[in-house]
Amino acid sequence: MYSIGQRLRDERVRQGLKLSDVSEKTRIRTVFLEAIEADQFDALPGRFYARSFVRQYARLLGIHDPELEAEIARELGEPGPVVTAEQVLASLGANVPERAPIVWRARLDPRWLAYGTVGLLAVAGVLGAYLGWQRIRARAEARQAAAAIELQASPPQQTESVPASRPEPAPTAPPLVVEVAARTSAWTKVVTDGTEAFVGTLQAGQQRTFRASDKVRILTDNAGALDIRRNGTPLGPLGPEGQVRTIELTREGHTVSAPKPKPSEEKPAPAEPSAPGEAPAPLPLNPQ
Image (cartoon, rainbow, N blue to C red; front, top):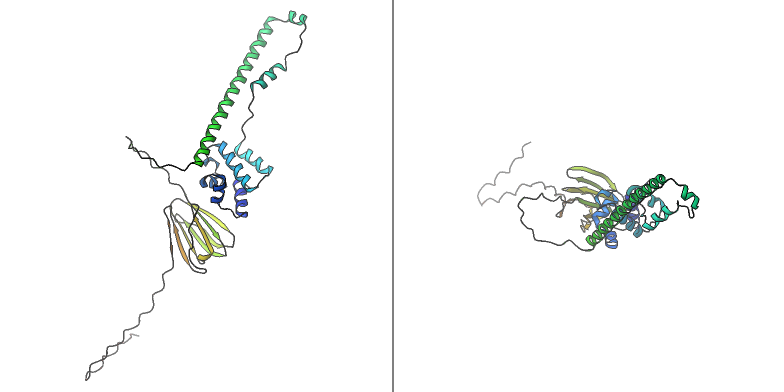
């Protein structure tokens, strides 16, 4: 059974969409889309946003599958029903007789009446506390949703740094995400942070995503067949068809290098002509 992220990623690739295309149409950041496709829902700002982002993504791809909705509910959970005060009062009144005989009221033990009153008050208190908690939870989720939407709509603003009395810890650097897609078949080797991550032939239409914290190094024998993106940004042409190239990528940029040509064999320099009347200079001997 496909996971949520695998289902969305396969459908996006089948439709020929890139993560940047989905981000532009849904206004969901690319880093959140990458987390969804990797089933890393803890990287999203709360379960409420995770459900909202996944459903927006699925709606853009035209996926209306009950199994996917069931998987979303199982993986991310669904908010419980909100009980209104009218429903509580109606549920309490449903167990009270509409008309009670006067004789029955006269014979009712006052102690049992007091016990019933205390029980009803206790139930009403518990339900009131539950309703208050539900309303507080709904308001908190609404505020979080509004903050997330505002965060997506407005680009990050640069602010002046104020020196603090104590040094603050350095922020965690975002991961380096590299997407490699093949237009035609190409032998490819990928090394992430010094560890070999992939070696083989990418066939036409295949795509792979690699993550690293520092550097990604790619060696291919068909540079013109590959399209490479660094954190969602295309690198552009890498070389002609059938040419060997080495591409090194970091978070700051990338370099493309061709193999160095082999040095040609050195030939002995011709002997200078001797002056008239002088014997010609002896030729150098090649040791056997």
